[in-house]
Length: 413
Image (cartoon, rainbow, N blue to C red; front, side, top):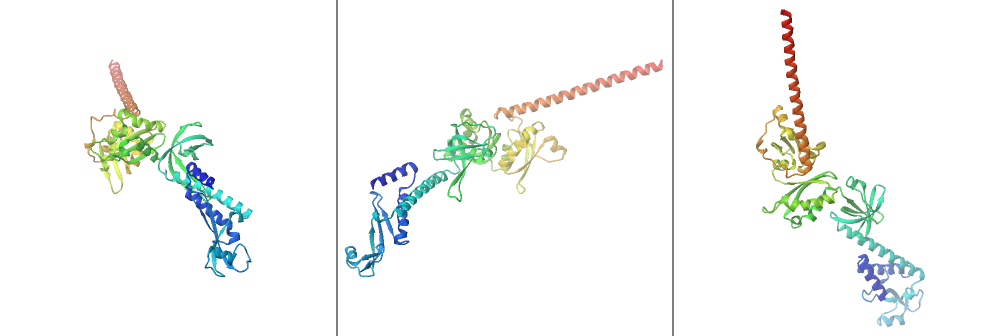
């Protein structure tokens, strides 16, 4: 019997199946196999967890003449077990395993294997259930259509849907990939499915929590996040320690921390901004890298009217409205952005206390700086075109005046 215990110990170590659960399954399998001969709920099976010895007992009626050896016992034999027993009493009698029929033994074996398999499945399910809402690293197996088959910790394979992949990323078999475990869901057939994602906003949040030590100890918190996977994310952070710069902690020395996260996201741009309990200040921060002249907030309607410098309107709105859209999701406010000239033309009243002429754009990424340069170049080109047009108009006016003078002189002559 020690071989059984050794096998159970090995299964517990390799498959993470609780030994006590397997012993219970074996006991139930033996009871189930004996139901046909000894009746349902009559048999009791016990297995010694140290030696593996199995003891099976069933109640038998004390009789003076045996009609069914499975349910009857002679009184003289019964008194060897219980000297005080009488006719028609029931006593627990041990059943030898040799008494099991071939069918009963096969049934017991099948039930044991089925329970061990179920225990293994349950152990894997519990393993991943504990890791919901976390990041796990897997190994790419192959493409299944447009989807990706990924092995997680050598325990099971899962499918990363093409919809949950960052646009443009490509993988080959054997590549390691980080996945966010959205959930682990059981199905009606007794199996389970692991839902994974690389586009979920929480994926960015968990990457920061792994990379930034100040988040691990609770000094810095992520208050909100908005994301368009593969393009840009905005992250609002707050420090519980006045001596710790929340944004600086996320960026890291020489930007090493945020660069590591950008690499994990295949180059996705990340704006880390400081959260503020004042919604006007928070919205101003969320619209960076654009400067803001004024923010008027309607907290009841969850709306904000924002005025920005004329030359920064396109920067505030962003390419295809992305900057404004992400800021609105980040702050949970509807944001109406106008240029200064638009606000004046519509008669809007605003306070320019937010505007800072010494606004420093160099603290933001190169892409934003390039966008700003392009806007400035366009403005210069437009101004130059207007100057040329004005010069041309003046020249035409002078020529016309000269022609009129010549015509008058000719007429007088």
